[in-house]
Every structure is written in C-alpha cells, then in structure tokens.
Length: 99
Image 1 (tube, rainbow, N blue to C red):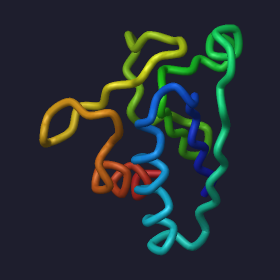
Image 2 (cartoon, rainbow, N blue to C red):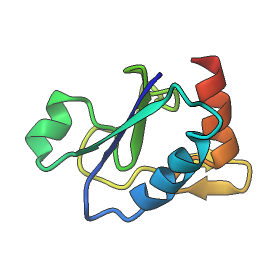
Image 3 (cartoon, rainbow, N blue to C red):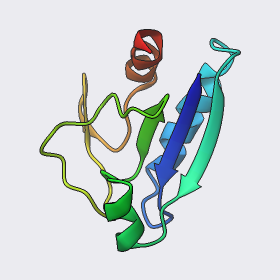
Image 4 (cartoon, rainbow, N blue to C red):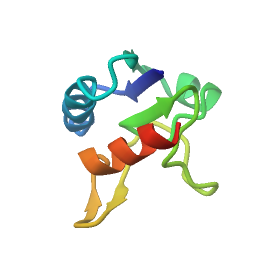
C-alpha cells in the first residue's frame, strides 16, 4: 500500500498527520510512506493539492470533497471532535482499511 503525505512547510499540521501515519505502519507492514513537499502554487494546481496535509492512499485522497479548494493553504478536516488540521488516527486507520 502506497501512502503519500503532501504538505508545505508553512503549515505545521502535516507533523500531526505524519505522526499518525508513522504509528499506523506497525498495523500495515506493507505500507510505504512517501513525503512530498509542495513548493509552489503552480505545483499545487498541477497536482490538485487540496491543502496541507493531504494524504493519498494508492494515489487517491480518501478525504477529498469535490468542492475542496486547490492551493497552498492549511487543510481542515472534519473529525469526531470538530474541525482539525489533520484526520484522526482512527479516521486514517479506517481509510487504510478501505483501500
């Protein structure tokens, strides 16, 4: 299973997502994580970057909504505890199980 963590340095929320993914590797030994820094607005447009952090599982963003904006911004996720800068570990676990 290929997981890509897309982020840009000006948004610290990617660190939380990275921590969650690192913890989930133990549950998914076949999972590989690639981290990719999105540096420019042009690259964000080209790859349809929906904000930092974005997580792709086998090339698919399981949290994307059709109307999510594309660009260099911090992304907001809807979690059981309200809006947050990263999906929860349990949300990621469920997304990985569906893939």
